[in-house]
View 1 (tube, rainbow, N blue to C red):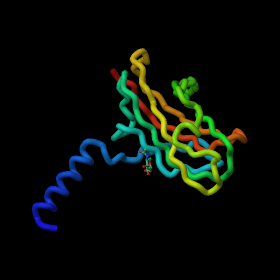
View 2: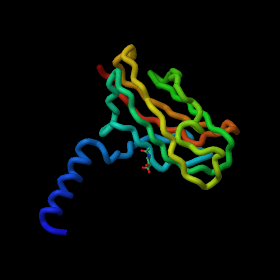
View 3: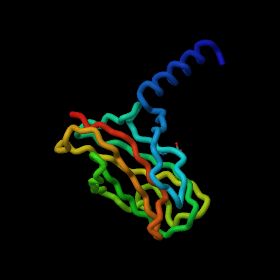
Length: 153
Ligand SMILES: *[C@@H]1O[C@H](CO)[C@@H](O)[C@H](O)[C@H]1NC(C)=O
Protein backbone atom coordinates (compact mmCIF):
# COMPACT_ATOMS: atom_id res chain seq x y z
CA UNK A 1 0.00 0.00 0.00
CA UNK A 2 1.28 3.49 -0.88
CA UNK A 3 1.62 6.16 1.76
CA UNK A 4 -1.37 8.12 0.52
CA UNK A 5 -3.67 5.09 0.52
CA UNK A 6 -2.52 4.16 3.98
CA UNK A 7 -3.40 7.63 5.22
CA UNK A 8 -6.85 7.42 3.63
CA UNK A 9 -7.54 4.03 5.20
CA UNK A 10 -6.38 5.26 8.61
CA UNK A 11 -8.58 8.35 8.36
CA UNK A 12 -11.61 6.29 7.34
CA UNK A 13 -11.04 3.98 10.27
CA UNK A 14 -10.89 6.94 12.66
CA UNK A 15 -14.10 8.35 11.18
CA UNK A 16 -15.82 4.99 11.53
CA UNK A 17 -14.81 4.69 15.20
CA UNK A 18 -15.70 8.33 15.90
CA UNK A 19 -19.22 8.04 14.50
CA UNK A 20 -19.93 4.80 16.35
CA UNK A 21 -20.16 2.71 13.17
CA UNK A 22 -17.98 0.10 14.83
CA UNK A 23 -20.24 -0.86 17.71
CA UNK A 24 -18.52 -1.23 21.08
CA UNK A 25 -19.91 -4.09 23.16
CA UNK A 26 -21.53 -2.91 26.39
CA UNK A 27 -20.40 -4.19 29.80
CA UNK A 28 -23.45 -5.97 31.17
CA UNK A 29 -24.32 -7.85 34.34
CA UNK A 30 -25.61 -11.36 33.73
CA UNK A 31 -28.82 -12.00 35.66
CA UNK A 32 -29.22 -15.73 35.32
CA UNK A 33 -28.67 -16.83 31.72
CA UNK A 34 -28.91 -20.61 32.13
CA UNK A 35 -30.09 -22.13 28.87
CA UNK A 36 -27.70 -19.95 26.89
CA UNK A 37 -24.61 -17.85 27.35
CA UNK A 38 -24.22 -14.25 26.29
CA UNK A 39 -21.31 -13.52 23.98
CA UNK A 40 -21.94 -9.83 23.37
CA UNK A 41 -24.47 -7.08 24.04
CA UNK A 42 -24.49 -4.09 21.70
CA UNK A 43 -26.64 -1.03 22.22
CA UNK A 44 -26.27 1.63 19.55
CA UNK A 45 -25.47 4.34 20.29
CA UNK A 46 -24.19 3.79 23.85
CA UNK A 47 -20.47 4.61 24.02
CA UNK A 48 -20.27 4.72 27.84
CA UNK A 49 -22.23 3.50 30.85
CA UNK A 50 -24.72 4.45 32.05
CA UNK A 51 -26.24 4.59 28.56
CA UNK A 52 -27.59 8.08 28.02
CA UNK A 53 -31.02 7.50 26.50
CA UNK A 54 -32.51 10.57 24.89
CA UNK A 55 -36.28 10.93 24.76
CA UNK A 56 -37.75 10.46 21.31
CA UNK A 57 -34.81 8.32 20.18
CA UNK A 58 -34.94 4.63 19.40
CA UNK A 59 -31.89 2.54 20.31
CA UNK A 60 -30.78 -0.65 18.59
CA UNK A 61 -30.20 -3.69 20.73
CA UNK A 62 -28.13 -6.63 19.45
CA UNK A 63 -27.56 -9.53 21.82
CA UNK A 64 -25.32 -12.33 20.57
CA UNK A 65 -25.66 -15.54 22.56
CA UNK A 66 -25.16 -19.24 22.14
CA UNK A 67 -27.87 -21.70 23.08
CA UNK A 68 -27.38 -24.73 25.32
CA UNK A 69 -30.82 -26.14 24.54
CA UNK A 70 -33.30 -26.71 21.75
CA UNK A 71 -36.39 -24.57 21.67
CA UNK A 72 -39.23 -24.04 19.20
CA UNK A 73 -39.88 -20.51 20.34
CA UNK A 74 -38.54 -17.65 22.42
CA UNK A 75 -40.14 -14.70 24.18
CA UNK A 76 -38.52 -11.51 25.40
CA UNK A 77 -39.39 -9.54 28.53
CA UNK A 78 -37.96 -6.17 29.45
CA UNK A 79 -38.08 -4.39 32.78
CA UNK A 80 -36.95 -1.09 34.16
CA UNK A 81 -35.62 -1.52 37.70
CA UNK A 82 -36.34 1.57 39.72
CA UNK A 83 -35.38 1.40 43.39
CA UNK A 84 -35.39 -2.42 43.32
CA UNK A 85 -38.87 -2.59 41.77
CA UNK A 86 -39.28 -4.19 38.32
CA UNK A 87 -41.51 -2.11 36.08
CA UNK A 88 -42.51 -4.03 32.93
CA UNK A 89 -41.55 -2.31 29.71
CA UNK A 90 -43.94 -3.20 26.87
CA UNK A 91 -42.12 -4.48 23.78
CA UNK A 92 -43.65 -3.97 20.36
CA UNK A 93 -42.25 -7.34 19.29
CA UNK A 94 -41.84 -9.80 22.19
CA UNK A 95 -41.38 -12.78 19.84
CA UNK A 96 -37.65 -13.56 19.71
CA UNK A 97 -38.18 -15.62 16.56
CA UNK A 98 -39.29 -12.40 14.82
CA UNK A 99 -36.32 -10.49 16.24
CA UNK A 100 -33.37 -11.84 14.29
CA UNK A 101 -33.44 -15.38 15.70
CA UNK A 102 -34.01 -18.21 13.26
CA UNK A 103 -36.26 -20.71 15.04
CA UNK A 104 -36.31 -23.48 16.07
CA UNK A 105 -33.31 -22.70 18.26
CA UNK A 106 -30.66 -25.40 18.05
CA UNK A 107 -28.36 -26.51 20.86
CA UNK A 108 -24.82 -25.21 20.36
CA UNK A 109 -25.70 -22.53 17.82
CA UNK A 110 -25.12 -18.80 18.18
CA UNK A 111 -27.80 -16.24 17.47
CA UNK A 112 -28.07 -12.48 17.30
CA UNK A 113 -31.24 -11.15 18.87
CA UNK A 114 -32.14 -7.76 17.38
CA UNK A 115 -34.67 -5.32 18.75
CA UNK A 116 -35.31 -1.65 19.38
CA UNK A 117 -35.53 0.27 22.62
CA UNK A 118 -37.79 3.24 21.89
CA UNK A 119 -37.44 5.97 24.52
CA UNK A 120 -40.77 7.79 24.59
CA UNK A 121 -40.94 11.51 25.29
CA UNK A 122 -43.35 10.93 28.20
CA UNK A 123 -40.79 8.90 30.16
CA UNK A 124 -39.44 10.59 33.29
CA UNK A 125 -35.83 11.75 33.41
CA UNK A 126 -34.42 9.15 35.81
CA UNK A 127 -31.59 6.69 36.21
CA UNK A 128 -32.61 3.07 36.16
CA UNK A 129 -31.44 -0.42 35.33
CA UNK A 130 -32.70 -2.04 32.15
CA UNK A 131 -33.19 -5.80 32.48
CA UNK A 132 -33.68 -7.77 29.26
CA UNK A 133 -34.66 -11.44 29.32
CA UNK A 134 -35.25 -14.02 26.61
CA UNK A 135 -37.19 -17.12 27.63
CA UNK A 136 -37.23 -20.44 25.79
CA UNK A 137 -40.32 -22.63 25.61
CA UNK A 138 -39.35 -24.42 28.87
CA UNK A 139 -39.57 -21.03 30.69
CA UNK A 140 -35.77 -21.10 31.02
CA UNK A 141 -33.57 -18.08 30.39
CA UNK A 142 -31.64 -18.08 27.12
CA UNK A 143 -30.25 -14.80 28.35
CA UNK A 144 -30.73 -12.19 31.02
CA UNK A 145 -28.60 -9.06 31.16
CA UNK A 146 -28.77 -5.75 32.96
CA UNK A 147 -27.23 -2.40 32.25
CA UNK A 148 -27.55 0.99 33.94
CA UNK A 149 -29.14 3.74 31.85
CA UNK A 150 -30.04 7.36 32.34
CA UNK A 151 -33.07 8.81 30.59
CA UNK A 152 -32.49 12.39 29.60
CA UNK A 153 -34.25 15.09 27.60
C1 LIG B 1 -24.82 -8.17 16.09
O1 LIG B 1 -23.62 -8.41 16.79
C2 LIG B 1 -22.85 -9.47 16.25
C3 LIG B 1 -21.64 -9.65 17.18
O2 LIG B 1 -20.88 -8.49 17.26
C4 LIG B 1 -22.45 -9.15 14.82
O3 LIG B 1 -21.72 -10.23 14.28
C5 LIG B 1 -23.70 -8.89 13.99
O4 LIG B 1 -23.34 -8.48 12.68
C6 LIG B 1 -24.56 -7.81 14.63
N1 LIG B 1 -25.78 -7.67 13.89
C7 LIG B 1 -26.27 -6.49 13.51
C8 LIG B 1 -27.52 -6.52 12.68
O5 LIG B 1 -25.73 -5.44 13.80
